[in-house]
Structure formats: C-alpha cells, structure tokens
Image (tube, rainbow, N blue to C red; front, side, top):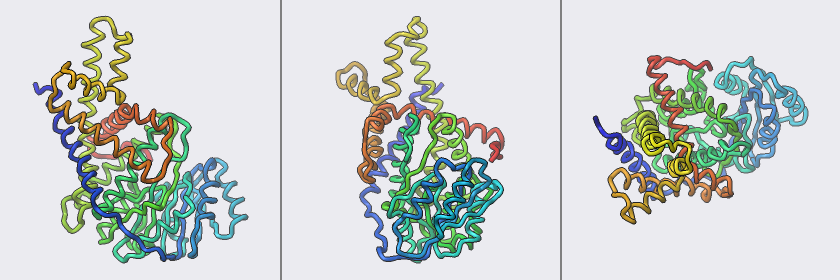
Length: 422
C-alpha cells in the first residue's frame, strides 16, 4: 500500500508550482486603460428578496461618478419581502431608475429581461446586495474603449463582517480579485465577477445574453465572449463591496452551487483548454479550475486521514483524547503555529526533514504573502479579525476542500447530471 505521505507529494508539489507561477506573473506589467471614455451605460441590478440591501445598492449606482449617460434598471425577480416597496419609493425619487418585475425566473433570465429593455451601449452588472465605490462605473467601462475587449471585471471586497465565516471570506475575495488581475497581466482572465462586471452590449446580444441553464452565468458568458474572439480585462480601480453569507449553512449552500457551476464551466468550455488561439485562457486559469477539482478530492482525503489517524494513534488509544495535549495537537494542525512548530523541530533536530515537510513549509511561506498582499494593493485595513482569520486560515480551506470533494463525488455518482434544484 502506498504511504499517505507519498500520495500527498504530487498535489503539494503542483500547488507549490502554482504559487510560484503567481510570483512570476507579478513581473509582467499591469494593463493601462483609456482615461477619457464615457459611453452610454445601462446598469442592471437583479434582485430577489434583497430588501435589506437594495436601497444602498441603488443609491451607490445613483451616486456613482459618471460623466456619460446612464440608466439604472432593477429587475425585481419575484421578491416576497419588502424589496418591491423599497424600489417603488426609490423610483419616485430618481428619474433615471427603472424597475421591472419578473416572476422568480432566476438570475440569468432576470438579467436577460433587463438587457431587453436597456437602451445603452455598455451593460454594467451589479448584484442586488452590493455597493459601488464612487468611481466604480467610470473605471469599469474604460477598458472597453479597446476594440478587442468584450468584457471587464471589477475588484470585489467584502462589506459585512457579522459572522466569523465572513472574516475568512474577506481574505478569499481579495485574493480572488488579485488572482483575476494576475491572469489579466498575461491576457488570460476568464472571470467577470457577479457583483461588478461590464459587457459591450453588441457582444452580449450576439452571444444570446446570459445562459439560464448554468449556475455560474457570469463565468459562462465570459468564456463565450473569449470564444468569440474578445479579451476580458480586470479594472483594478473599479471596486464593489458585496455582502457574503454570515452562517456556515448559507455559506455551504452558496459554495455547493459554485462548485456545481465550476464543473459545468469546465464541461461546457473544455474546448478552450490548451488551444493557442485562446491564448493564456486555455493554458492557465481554466486548467487550474479543472485541476482544483481533482486536488480537492485527493488532498481532502489525505489531510482528513493525517489529522484523525494522528489523533487516534497519539491520544485516543492512550485514553488522552480529551487532554490538553490533544487540544494543542489540533491547534497546531489548524493554525500557523503548526508550520512554526515544524520549522522549530527540524531546526533543533527533533524530527528529520523530508520532501513533503519541506514543500509544505515552502508552500505556507510563499502562500501567506499572496493572501496578505491584496490588502495593501487594494487599500484594505488589516484588523484583529483579519489577523484571527489568517492565523486559523487552514481549517477554512479544509471546509472548502470538504464541500468541493463531496460535491465532486455526488456529481460523479449522478453521472454529471444536475442534482441541486436551482
């Protein structure tokens, strides 16, 4: 039987190579965009039961600095809370606001309904629970001045901090935006985040708008834009703050949908991978998404096995399963103290270094600056809650691996068919 440490060597080495590649891409220059580009803009805001957030979202769109013509269209998709009442009051207050109603047809169909009644040359998508920064609209449209650019993604930050799970998402969202910007440096971005993105109207219409048969309609449209010969840029000065799930249950439900959507994206657009005509898109981000699904299954099993066999062998069999030493064991596993302790034990000769330990240490040392750098790049304050999340980041990634692993296994069992109700 192959030792579990040997099985872990390959995915750990691949993950290390991925992190190193991101440091390499940082050497490439950032994209420069036109500063004087003011096309007419239609801002589409799909909303279903967003009574808690929709007023702030609309106000941020109204107040956004923009010298060109803009209209704001909110699609109230069968809301049963006070979203409709709030929008009715807002439409009386703002002439540029138009509200249309759909009968809970889903986000894709709601967006297509908004697209059908919109009049302007550029379509900006804003989620109903997100707030635009003052310069977000003018900055998100600037890359569209280039004829070869069909869509643009913005930088997504987390607004709410109500639950501990949101503290970890703050790191994750900032890093995801940073990763998108890295892909953009090598003309390989395939992401147009739901909270803030922009499309050329003629491109979106020719492609048939948003696909109502997928879970990640934004990524699906982005990849269809790429297939049609356009590039997708990231506007790093176009910022939106979105509200994320604050409970583990709601977070897990969201992630299951994302995981299913990711599988659909890979399945539906696998013809992009490793094709020269699609440039870096087919050689970097899409293969990484694909690999992550295999990585989650392998490393999810490996880490679970390592943690709990160690706990059983060192503590449970000796009747110390609830001891302070057992608690310390888990703290070391689930925090940065574990890596610090490993370095100490290797340096003092308490344990011998092996390839897996060396790569694990190197991976941690290289990965954490990548998570921290976006805070400074995007001018986010780093507070005590962020420090806590960084300290215990490992168990959060473990939860992500578990959800992704179970999603993958269920998908395989069902032969690739949908098993979630939309």
